[in-house]
Length: 218
Image (cartoon, rainbow, N blue to C red; front, side, top):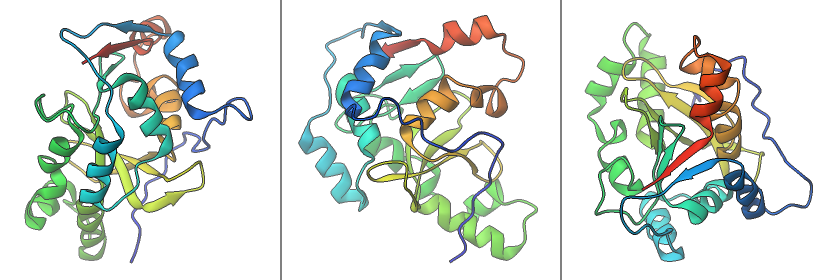
């Protein structure tokens, strides 16, 4: 099977951080360096059973970097833009419950619809590969412009335990490969130089810093 990957100029190497530092400790450092805006209600982090139920349903093991992140925070909005979902939040809007997000995403759409929206102008072989790719992707993040961000579960990465290549799926057009791990997604895409390349290339450095250094808990 042909694997559809569209590479960009952004480095795909995972930022390893200090050697010997556990992932949850790295996230503790991350959250201590940004402004966390409190949730409107009582927030809670997903539990082990939430992860297990999702993994059993979707036939995948969630990346350790992602599990450690949402175990620390639960779902939320990073930089006023990136809506990060977590398992176990079925009572919330579909943007923030990982299962509901995927049940209502492009991965469940008819193949004909996926081809029309995301494969226009491509030859039949590449179109077929992209349809299969979008049907197997597992999404964890959305933007207000209806862009979905998720893991290609066949694109296994050596960046860390159970890491996969991450793609951005625009409202129209094929998926775009952006990085090789959730940790890299947070630092290189959401908070790093990758943001301008993929989203807002006219954003000032000051605006980028203020935007990226907030996390609104849900």
